[in-house]
Length: 244
Image (cartoon, rainbow, N blue to C red; front, side):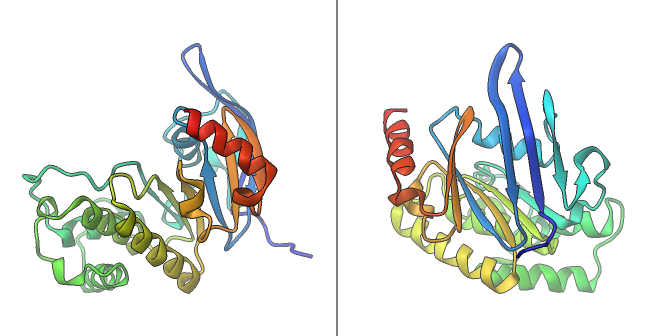
């Protein structure tokens, strides 16, 4: 029997943008070391759910706990890292280098107004090596392709040494070949580092090999299954996706 405290607890959460309901009565628990995929059609509330988890939005009702603490009391922000949708789409004129972008991931551990030290730079180089981007460390971030930029933002997330990693559509804009490489890399990182993963995607099949469980979301929690891509619930969810 697993008695470990859940990393994330979402209890009967609802949220609306103005008078437009987006999420209603969502309850979900994520265990340490678990990889959970959040799938569903466009406008289903997937990105909104992640924003609620990291505190960028506040639920209209219900409650969220991180590592056993109510979200409004949670202060250990270095324990999680969030990569928002299309994080890796930066204008070619953006002045920061790859190293500077990754070093920003250390802020949650060191504080906003402290200088980066040798340890921080070593951790940044290690994180870039983890995602296969070490050779680009001194290049302007804007000179990289979208897929390369996305890897850099994953490195920034890893540089904070998180326990919980939240990714919102991390392969948006990637071709199928690079998408497959990215997910292979992500699976390897999650296993080696013992991360808990929450991954938003519209593609059930693409993430089915890297997550332990897929949750289908469409305003309500439609289904929650360990083999959603092969289940009757999965077939229903695919119909929702294809008709969206």
